[in-house]
Image 1 (tube, one colour):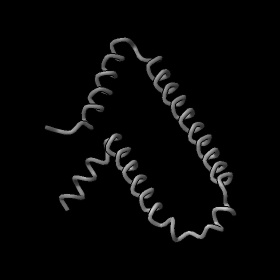
Image 2 (cartoon, helix red, strand yellow; image 1 turned 90 degrees about the horizontal axis):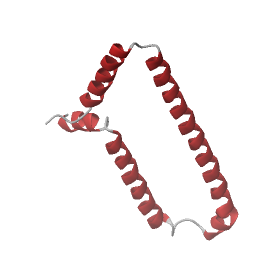
Image 3 (cartoon, rainbow, N blue to C red; image 1 turned 180 degrees about the vertical axis):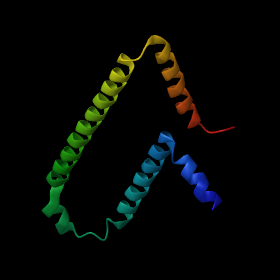
Length: 108
């Protein structure tokens, strides 16, 4: 149970999550190298590089679209939230946002 709660707390950090996905990708790549001898050579000629190339293009363009939309939404929401706030309230809002960011840091 201790390991579960510890992993759950660590998974909140974006850097830990990205590192975990990276390690998982390396693990899958190593498994693919070991399993390459099982796949028949005929499959390579049927699928070819062009099929994988097209899939990667679709995934890359979709990811770019999603990131661009998310960033634009975040900037617009922050701008509209800070636009209607008085200067003294803006400082309080910034302090609140900083305290929320600090609450996700690992306690000493």
